[in-house]
Length: 313
Ligand code: NDP
Image (cartoon, rainbow, N blue to C red; front, side, top):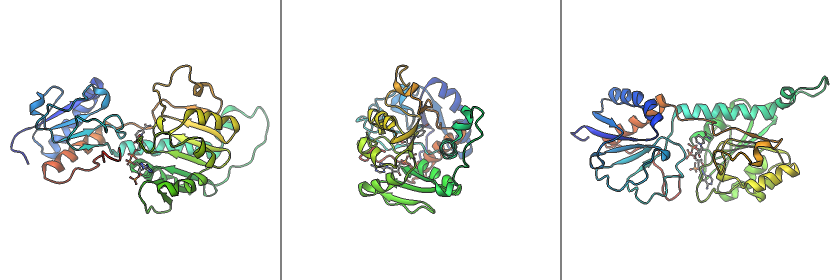
């Protein structure tokens, strides 16, 4: 524990400062950390940086006291390769963010599982249709079983969905058929009538959902992508939608954001665009997570959720 007041630099957008400042201040005081939180500490005095990539700070050289950079975002693809960053980088794991993602994924899986669109768009006076299958007879795959993917898998499994998941390292999750590594991917893809992408964007996952992988999904599968746009080969997805290999894609993330006005996804009858709103970091719980992590470091404990710079997430 240092004997001087900690200097914490908040390096995110102006509106985030207004949103986070009261919660960070309260969390710091509750934790008993003597800290000065500011947007403009002199670089040579800064101990920790609370960071978002769109906040304007991308050169981390010239911060001689810097001990860690704590990202407000769960996805760190914009900062992980930054050569000027020589201290540990943590990514955001926030109970509020996780809760929001569970709600988004569960809602959109239920939409497709229950075939809600038929009723929402109207039956035109035709008293037809069959009851949907039970969730226990619906196969869902989650690619990525980290903070978000594992929580979504668990929530869907509690609703009785037949859930499989895929990650880099082996996992043992109650009620989930887990697969891992290159060898496990085909089995995971072959399972999902509905597949959810919750992988980080890294060198290994860029374009992972390409024509070959789309072809491994069951005919007429539904794809949900709240992960990152770069996971998907967009042209291959449009082809697969055209042949009916993919029945519907609900996309929250895109290679270019905002999605350009003339992009075919906007008007495609079997694509649902949501504007990167699947879930957001929530200031009250995220501030607590950040301050708890700084307090750990100050007690000499290891930081949590440290990014593996070589793996890229
Ligand atoms: P985590 O880092 O906790 O989890 C990532 C998961 O992906 C882990 O299970 C990891 O495997 C797996 N994975 C990574 N690389 C590979 C690979 N090459 N092969 C197989 N599996 C791999 O991330 P989060 O769950 O917190 O977040 C996931 C992503 O969600 C974020 O990176 C971000 O892009 C996106 N996101 C989107 C939001 C939105 O609003 N649309 C909001 C927040 C996040 P292992 O467990 O073995 O490490």
